[in-house]
Image (tube, rainbow, N blue to C red; front, side, top):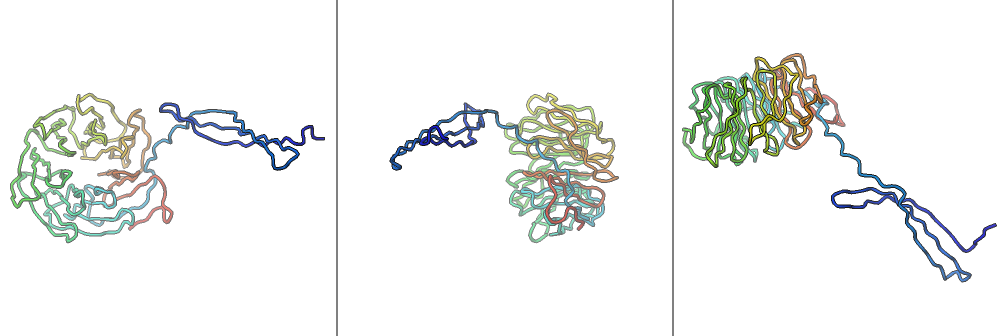
Length: 369
């Protein structure tokens, strides 16, 4: 028998979010609805009560994913691949071959789009312009070449270095190419003029310039003399940090506050850009006799390095712990490049380029082109 026949109740559990300052708190709310029905069915009163059953902070964000799955292997058929590079938006890749050729590939399909021939010896480095209309490359033949992407023709062939050219890169507007050579100089070339002489020569290095990176008004170089040089081109200043081992690769962090260097003592170092203070040291890989690449992930969460033992090593930037040891093969991992925005990695070993991703693709897990 019902004691109160005209009283009715209903309960429902609802999730909601409350904001307190900069914190967001998830809450589960119990809604209780009670209504009283009079003899007249048209007269009904409704009351709503809310009771907070539980409150808890939002879960921590998931750990950054790492490119641990092999998506495809590209047989470049250009001898040994000396360097592999993403283009500006990460949709294409450039492979530099020991057979004097430079090739442009689709990353998603692994198909060859264009072959650029014009160097007299093996190609050592390349870079694409921000609008993908031009490519610059350097070679052991002492030259730097500016290419038209669409036609594959040589726009300019620049001579001036006294030895092989190890590295080359555009500035952000692609108005200047910068090249570093075994002759110890960095030369700056104007891409818009028809002059064949460099507009500036930086000759502070006492040995081969092995690597360079340019971001906005700053130029970072690494040399076999064990010094990292940062040029503030706007202020006309030079900052030098000494590392007691020949340097193979340098790069800026994405936030522009740090520099990363790899050297032949099998160590990768993270330095504060302004003070030169060492913020992190990453070891475990092997780098004793080869000029190998290092880089940071697209969100500055991990440090990556090639190794002579056939692996790519990936460390947590803050903790310094090894997060991933990626087995590429049995030979030396010569070069690597991280996608500018996504979790995707390129590696080069012997005559092949491997494409790695965080998740396997839907179609075919690994494909040889």
